[in-house]
Length: 115
Length: 112
Image (tube, rainbow over all chains, first blue to last red; front, top):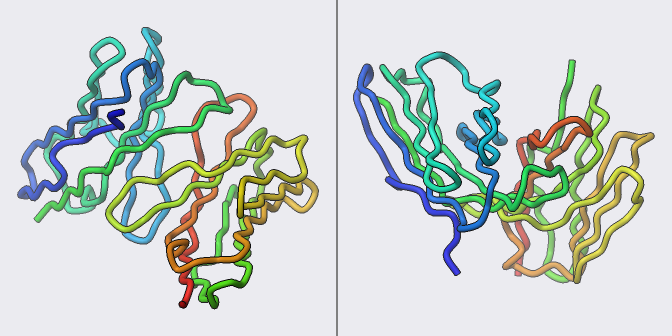
């Protein structure tokens, strides 16, 4: 069966440009998460969607970051006016529900490089 | 301050030996703790979950312990194989939340 997919796999952009990253979760998974992983570091929570509830945006590092989700399917993470410190791998994960005991299924990530 | 600590140095062991990885945390009271495996260029893959009222969990060659007094989890791989070489991440889940709070991971290298 299909897992979580993300596109593009790699993105190189110039400082100041906007980028849009896409995540397709596993069908039927109501919860969707975005994380950022800097080189050699753990995953940093960015945002969480659960069904039709208001998203938890508490992890977004600045107002340049935003995310949307269409129903219980695809999500896009947008970074406006990119900065060099935004360079990282952006990982998307989905799970059956938002419960604490649910394992998260991760996509392969999008590697973003800001020149 | 709140911290999750995993050994930043790689753990290098001989095939067949038991690998033991440590996850220590400070100023957290997690209800659950999860372990994930991450290979280069890929997203993490879930391995095991242990609840705060469980002391030990096993799955095939994997064993996880959770000591809420010591604020520590140990992750063991018995009869290690070169294919076990990867980075292993621990993640805490608080009782009041659904977010995973990740450690920075420990890289395991298993020599043939």
